Length: 400
Image (cartoon, rainbow, N blue to C red; front, side, top):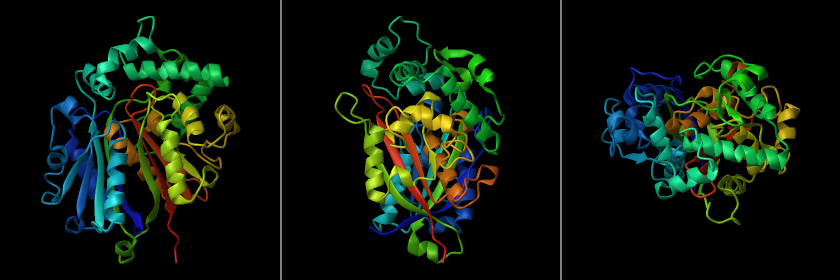
């Protein structure tokens, strides 16, 4: 397997753009990524298009990538449509990395795009429900909301149930969950593409509308619209261009085994594989982007990724190490909570943030001496665990 690098990135603002469709979002991200990589459309050998719920949200099925990219000049290329719940575009990135590293193509293009805002507010909720096993959906709802008083959003009820269990096990408090939101909103306030760009304080987070106890509105990620793109190429192809690249050290995907109580969490399985492939460990990380669909997830995922020992995530948060200015910022983009969560675009957007950080392009969010970054992107739910997780480790390319 040969070395592959990220040579260009593009990302749109994230938000609720009722008048926009997927196509113009994807076009903008693609154009910016190709320009950044000093690549023409004709240079691209393969295209991997990540979209999670276009069929359920706007009716477009089967050929989503070909439709979204119809006017980009990419038709005629191999376009592979990738759907893997919230991990769709990180899965697309995994496939692009495999294609380039194996020698199947010199240059691959990855796009993640999603249009979630909808006049029918029930549609996004139904689309998200489809990321669980529908045969067990009612049983899942009954298990996580035994009193029958669910919120109407199965995933918010699920995060609430997981958060309550974690509070019992770890001693975490609602104030700790609020601290994560304050941290993410501060980072988002410095990110020009973030959906929410205002600082908040603990009282604002705790007093915002209760969604599913103990999770308040400001502890939740928001549905939205957006697109992100990355150009992946061989190191040899990159060396012929006057560009700054980022090394792909590892990218691993695993499916959850939520029916097996003895199996490790899928995030742990994927991260162990990624660390082994990269020859690194959690102690080597300078920066992390993880899937904080609700703020308690940061604490749980920090432990599953090995960023701290089991039970120590609250202490890690309170230490300040994971905030901007700390020695291992977590979600300097603002995370899903502040940047937003257009589900099919989220994984690619995480990688754009890491690439910006490792190339020193993150502006006021820039982590000092960022050399190694990790992204974790989960998707769906089966049994008692996420259905999929992708963990990617990137490294700053040494300059000669």
